[in-house]
Length: 376
Picture 1 (cartoon, one colour):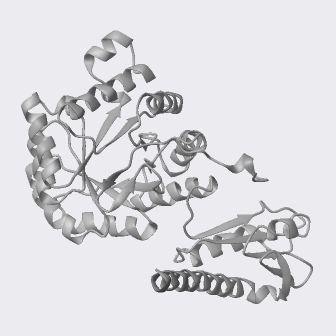
Picture 2 (cartoon, one colour; picture 1 turned 60 degrees about the horizontal axis):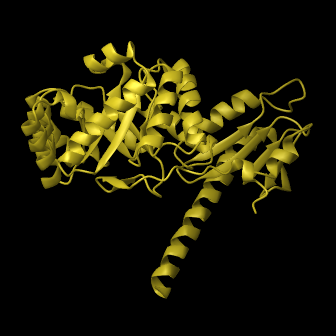
Picture 3 (cartoon, helix red, strand yellow; picture 1 turned 45 degrees about the vertical axis):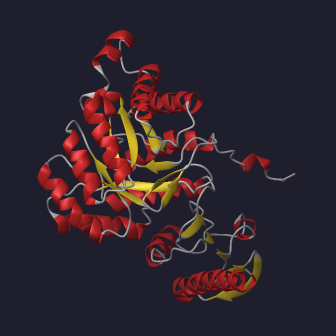
């Protein structure tokens, strides 16, 4: 029995599908997505955003395809993208077929607004022929009229009924490589809808609080909504919707997953808010370290504490730690006091230590892989 049962998250069991090479659902890690906002017809601008998102850690990127010129450009974007792409389709079934032919790994559609049953069958055939999965994307702001008339307003029941209605259309066409989202900008509505949907089916769920807002306010809303769902084991892939650069969405997504110990990427800094006891400027030090360590993808933990009240305790839980003192400051390695460092050299020294630790972790991974190949 674990002594830390309070930290265990039991993920909802869902079927596994694929977006290109990225597994979604089942036992796959929770993937992080974002969406470009450049004109898709501007291939270079769109690719620039995709590469920035991928550098920040995005596993999947969505690209809007509102017209024939966009799906024509998508073919070139797919070739230059380092990650699989989801084509965002609304209303016109031909755009979905063109996107599948252009190499999209997934189609984001609402089968209900694609058109007749024959048109839905054509989209499903294109998805099957080209190895695309499909995301059913339900949004509280665009529910079907009959559901709004019956329920009176967007509500969890209406959103889930919409999702299951669209799901049945795909299942009737013998298509099951599907994931589903039921997004709303209202945190309460989104969370309740996802909770109800999680009980109603076993398909993987794409989480999001849509139109969450600007960087700070949107991060808070998304962290509350996504955090509640992920903590309860619901969610297989996430997109944080911010009025901010695409890479910021990715960073916030990873920060949410790191906070819940669901996925780790890059340096996790544990730092105090600082007070009059601090032996150095904690806030400025952490700001500089975040910038200088942003290039590291390997999971490494670093504690930066201004004094000895909580410093030794926090250092026990991190790979590398720093505690402020009078004059020189104490550096911890693997939770143990290791050496003191001059304040003038402190930041450069910590950056060097973290880089070495990351390199050592990667070397251990490589050695383990080589050993597996030999023994296997």
